[in-house]
Length: 237
Image 1 (cartoon, one colour):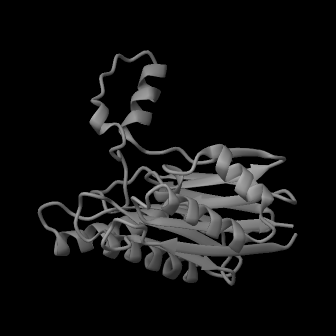
Image 2: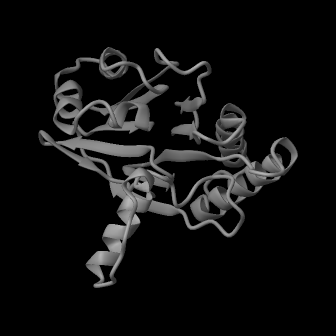
């Protein structure tokens, strides 16, 4: 199979700084998005360090050896946590991180926070990752029969992030890639403002990854551009 990829980030129309970062490394077959946490200082520094550490840690993996994805995420978290103690001793710093690493026909996904990995397959769009938010955690507890209460204003607050005090509970998944699959790694500046059916239609109709990324970012901006928007697109032919 042939892989085509493209990445695009945009500051939006409201935020004074772009706190999103991304990686689109065709040599490493490594792709990622990270989003600095709103309400905490140094969001851009957090996401930049997370992406930089991710790239460096993968470079250190010996050829032919399978990366330890949980260990890599834990080490990235440790580095961002230490930086946070320097830049913001009182509050710390943090970001989301969602990456995809291709080995053969396997796509390995590492995920912390509420950025997302989505897959379009046979005209159906599926979010492969879970948003690590208060709302989702409460839903999971309710499904187990636990009585829970949640304030509406807190429902989107993150329960996990890169930069939190260790240990980190990360989500690591592996999926088999099929011909014609299309994947999107996106920060919530896209997923909060572009509906799932719109994402599906854009991914399906686009002839090139660049076209899909541009349309997603443009649509998020057309909805007010209230957040930074970042998309990394993978097309498998």
